[in-house]
Length: 236
Image (cartoon, rainbow, N blue to C red):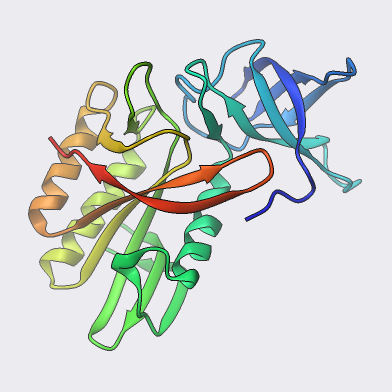
């Protein structure tokens, strides 16, 4: 997936109200951008750090652009636009990159399911039955380790999705939690129990119920991003 239009560089001044960020371009232009990330963005931004954004030419938009990438304090590159995760996964699914999820005959997005009135990111149809795939974007990394973690803030919604997947697995339906790691130089993934112990517990319970947990990392630059590498998942 190439970034179109081409991304522009700036320096982060401030992120606030979750969905707004003030940046300054090398030419001295100050802009308020849309920040498409509902999490805390812990460890993936710092005032004065480099950021990259896509500029919009749509006159109907209130803000001139969208924050896409961040250089983390650890020197990694992070795609902070969580809306990129599902298109990345779909691109990888259709290309056959995700070895565990090849051979499907149909793909549907945002399918209603479950006892708690959820929507699954992807339903894949196979001759032997469907697979339900829930996608989560990871950007939380740490200094001096190649392990990333999820979530970066308490997520009741994330725990709900794990419960829904566990229910499917108990019914004999294939259920998959897929972590899309939008952070460079990562080799392993773990639950962030120090941030959300309830989510970590829900993940362990889901695995015990038969939910498959997969993680794939990206190859990321300021020109393009693609899902490519299978990563290890540390449940405990």
